[in-house]
Length: 349
Image (tube, rainbow, N blue to C red):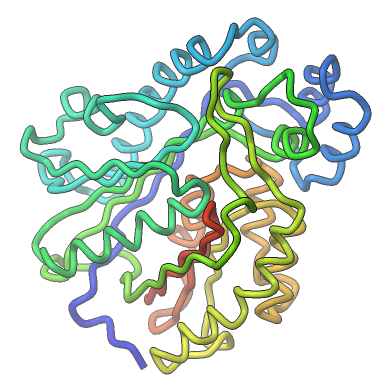
């Protein structure tokens, strides 16, 4: 059995949303001019009841190409990122000046300098803070970012690390693209920003320990999930085979990972699983033979906020941080993303 000794811990988590909350019915009505009845069918079975969006619904049809969408992304992403980072620091009782490294992830907009670089002065981060922007990991990036936080803090046990995830998925919707992939994406994804603060082992733990992680990219799956990036911005690549790939690989992957630490699926009390969509959540449940209520928080996140891409696992982790399992319990964070890849992170209370 793995030990908590020497492991970093999660001190605080926060998720912030834009103010424009819309029911799924309102989104369907706003997109009906380009999506048609097929979109209504996908939206009705998406598991999403409502979402917060970066802009009021009426403004999406006025965006003129990628430049305007990306300009909107930068303004709103910075505002939400600042709110999320400061909220997570407050929850962790950590001052901005105490942060030694920031990992940031986004896959729904482009900016150089990256988001965490633009936030340094406005959030009070030190000018010598280490910056590690991540791009291209998509939905897996929240879990992968936490895994890299773990790796860093194992080497620097007296440091404090921040993870920042910002996704404004609604700004990537292609109104000229009537592919099934784009219609499914438009029915699923929501907008938000999340932040996590973790501390090294020499500091007193205030939350779950981050014990271990595993990254995996599966063969011949590059076309399962991702973006085609061109003149009009981000065009979704979203294969109908995602759930099949998850069922094929994930069960064995998780069981092998847990066995390395003397654990089994039955030893996991808290499941922090990316809210990818109903079929993928079902595939995870089936692959791991989980009881019906194991992924309730994941399904609630999807229902209330949509698929938040890299922010999703932080949204699922947040209520577990507020109501943790008993001391001595284990949790498992799982996310999947482009590649096709998975990231598994073992947590201990």
